[in-house]
Image (tube, rainbow, N blue to C red; front, side):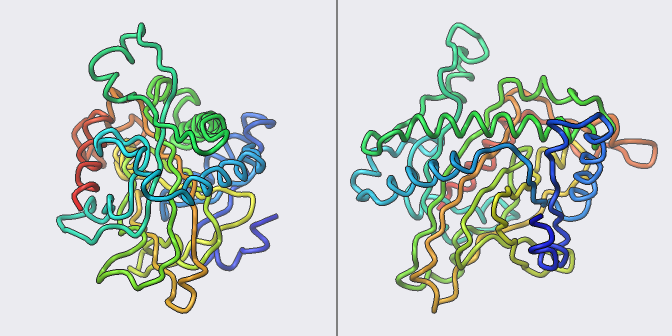
Length: 339
């Protein structure tokens, strides 16, 4: 369907559109076919587009609408929902993040964006996983703006949809890696994923030197699930020959990209690729407001990320030492907040 409509653009980027509906209704053979298509995409460029994902477009529209209402509030109201940068909950104002700082040894300009973030709700404090000191820090309370009707309810519904989709993708990942379908279940049963909505405002005046909507970086977790708007100044991915190429936003689909932890798990069989969000051309800057719904799908905070048995052999020994999810993410997040 959508592959025919934008096939040339997607082919030029080597980003396939993969229909995952067969996972929900098909046989093991259909699941395996989808998984092998995903495996090929991850080896090539680390990005793909999925359709047949079972996330309601009505839910997507409602999440966009309440988020836009929030961003239309005054800065004084939005700032009430700012928390400590280390918490990663609530509102992050313009200039509060610099994603480019997380890649390589460099200091970049702050990103031209603002963000609201949330995570798992109602964690049972009697469960030591959530009630321990580390668990309380990881699953700190969400911050909900009261000025926007149904904001909390809609975002909790969206988080649940991302929870289901993320786990589905991890099942397909396991099959693509020649592992049992449930291989990753124990690493994601209490995952520390974050759902965010980012607002890239119109640019009334030109950004500062070297300032982008979001600086060039790789994502940190297992995978990222993105739903964005088709406006000037959007997502770009680095091609193998070092060129920045635009990623088309296809209606009814999600853009999925691989994160660093998944690349480490696979011993770089799969690619966590460099990407950024570009500024709009100056003649379109006042009609370029873009909003993105993003799920950063992270494993459990204590998951041990080490080379998978299907990704090492006599010719390919493990490249990376084992690392816990939380330690890796904290180091990256701290650098992103150095603005």
